[in-house]
Image (cartoon, rainbow, N blue to C red; front, side, top):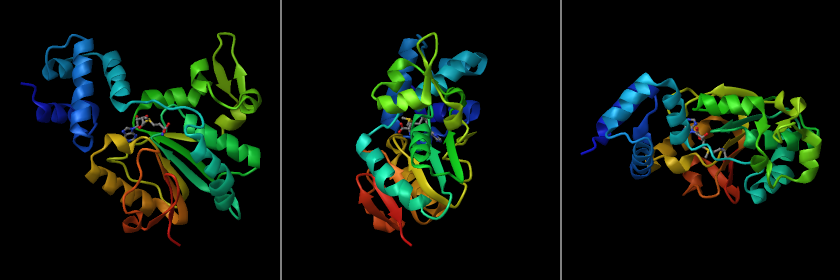
Length: 256
Ligand SMILES: C[S@@+](CC[C@H](N)C(=O)[O-])C[C@H]1O[C@@H](n2cnc3c(N)ncnc32)[C@H](O)[C@@H]1O
């Protein structure tokens, strides 16, 4: 019998990650796949390996947190961001923007590119993630060809440089617009006064109670009329109960 409750406690102790906030079935399935992949016989053997082997630990965190991301992910949403959200929040101030669960930085750099194109200047463009290894990747701003696939060629040629090994490096002018920080949405305090918060494709892994708790915190961190954007599969039921109204797709706005 694999004792998941004990594993949750052990993971919390060794990695500081609170698995109780994540959907159990999905997490168990992923962890069991990891055990199979590394021929680990039990949760205890996994924890022992995590304690002893730094490299295994880093790989496991990366696996557990699922870092899939891409530039301009969900173009319909980015069209609304470009045409409605950014002009609105930049109209008479330098907006504060937070990409939470930023992964490899593709989302926040997409926002930075749109702002640069429109000559908007952010007051803050903050990108946070639980996983330090993925944040390091984001900070280097170097991407595999497959990761820039699908980006409009005009942005690729204007804001990226292809390296000798075929990878693409994002321009310093875009990189320097972003502040990266390690941040656990479940346990660290949230900064305030944001005009736009994106937390996309992160909620799906959390239990519905955790989702509600986090939405409440995000709304608290938004300025009145600020925007909150979730992933396309993460529509908020009854947005009014959080003080939000739906603008379109998975884009919400806090009441004035
Ligand atoms: C699937 S990626 C989403 C990336 C990007 N937002 C997007 O939509 O393309 C999910 C990210 O959430 C991060 N994450 C998971 N749990 C987290 C937590 N408790 N606090 C902060 N980030 C978390 C993961 O490390 C991962 O990078």
